[in-house]
Image (tube, rainbow, N blue to C red):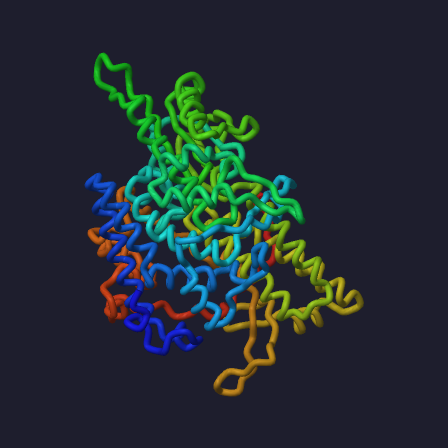
Length: 529
């Protein structure tokens, strides 16, 4: 490994980390990933293995892996060893320590987070070194998983999102002659129960290292627990391993139910799969078809991987009754499919906002606004691609009522006009904006004002679904993804030539400042979420 060729500073120091040529590293990794894609498409698995070895042992791959684990949200969360890589010098030494020979992962640190149903979800927190090793092997595994993935799988995949999955649901269900029945499926403890034997036999990666990760165990307090099945939630590579275990289901269904409506064939069963991680729906033209033919086939497929369907969350529903999927409700009204935010999802958002307001009774107005803005705006952005205008207005009414109680509690003896002057402002042609003056000043010396965002301020916009066959690691698809990013106003440095990613055609997106939005007063006649 010629370290000096990739840096602009002496090695062995913190300056060496800061001097890494990141554009050159990304270009080198992308080049190897594109070669892995080509070898996978050609079925040259020996070549795939050789290229993966090159990538996982390269300086560039290791550098990008360390960069990822030290800049993501978990950078301040330590594993069982309590070590964090927080300084440039520590990051540089970590990069040099990533070696396959003699590598032995430490047990995971078990923590629990609450689920929506009140239960606790177990997470396994690897050490920083184990996370970096997983990240560098993921760089070599993702090109293979993307090339062999199901066409309509959208969870934990690069350049795909829940919006793509929902748009595919619309395409499958919207027509008058579309399937009218849906199998809503959920896998019981997917991450915790995947067969280790299946993973070791079928995942195209370094088997020795993969075995060590799977068998590392976890620490709960001071007790070491072995792991005989599953891949831990919390590991960087775990979502990709789960996707690989579930890939092939769509092809299996297509082969089993590939029929046309021509004479003598018996009609098209219209069996279509849309999957996001371990949640998926399968359409069909009858309840009996889904119950007696599709479900047994799915159960057999999952059983070979050590998995099974959740009886509580798996059911067959008619489209006229509606189905909740990924926080959205899919339902036909008099033959017309409408996709809206699910009622329980909107209620959860309103409850969270109300709890935040009630939990900050003595906080400054500015502090409360900065706490609420990410909740309101983030939730609205998630639902902006569906029929959500009415639900946005409902959320705004909940916010307005909660804020009114918050203000009245602080000033029980003050008049309404006094409260309006203190907490609400007129900005331009808009009145009644919940806003606060900050201690910061603009370039002209005028005090800045922070304002509360409104869900209704987010415009409804149809989402353009990613092409099912598009592969972000395939060089042939780089112009396609570059065009998508340009349309969204952002630039992805992975998809353009080295040193040439900044251009007039695709300028980088500037930070969006705090917006000033009007919080509407309650209105009558609108349905509550």
